[in-house]
Length: 436
Image (cartoon, rainbow, N blue to C red):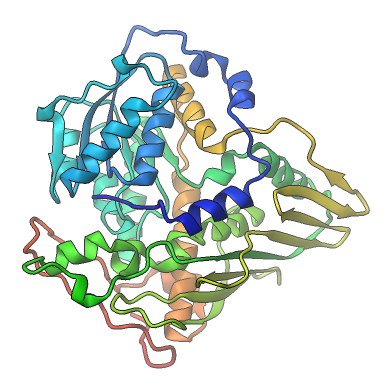
């Protein structure tokens, strides 16, 4: 499947919100064995599943992270996406042509292409399809004994989360790497900030507030632009962001980064409950996702974590985080990371490319035989995102116990070809949409 995250709005937004993220120099200093590529006896074969913008970027980062690695297999729902991705990867500076060895027989397209990549002899896979497909891909990958880099979120409904939890446990038992695309966890300034918060530098944490205010990722095209004869499933996958079974909605697919900050703040202890407001302000022309949601998470110690998510053009853009403590305040604002109050501090340490660092650390852990597994926290943040979306869709207070036991399955099962039957739910109506 293809995950197109090349929206100018989103790319500009992420760039402007990560001013503190510099080049890969600090990453090379921290992980010289991997980045400078001391060869090992085993050549690692890499497979890419999902050849959109994020998948292509992750693939180039993986190839830069280890000197003894080759890209040998690729899969995407659409052949043109695969070929474009292969061309970009092959021309990326710093990736020798000998690292890209994808034969025509190892280019797989269609809904089931991921199975062929897993059967092609690869050692490591990158999972960057639309999230609705990810639970099945994760489970199949660990059952096939593959190390994994998986983009966020890991599921779009709770039954999918349960499959992911199963995959995480299998990966632990098999000692397989499972690194999550919650990239801010690998950013040096933010790692240092959260470390200081957890060590008590701002005293007792009282509340956190995050923003993810940006433009649409991929607006839904008018219905009359749909080519004649195109199946419902193909139309949805080509416009995947606009359908909640594929993307999870804007909160779960994009603002889950901010949800992850809140989870990180609370040491990945789940909230007791949450309430939310949200809706669709701009007509969707199809699709069934909200364009704004605001969530208020509550913990039993009375701490609250709140986030505002909006994806509407022409509005104020912001990606910030603010934490109120009993002895100070912590800030992520405009690329600056700092603390005010009794123990004031500003980050002045090395900067890194967080996207590259997550791959550097993953391959270092594989080579060292002590693999990184982000499974537990990635499941927690994904479920928190689904919890917030559910509260917004239903208009109800949702407890952690309720969401953990939810039964609603929005992602269709057994999609084997483009003619497979799939039905998108109608747009949610708070107060009328039921919790299942």
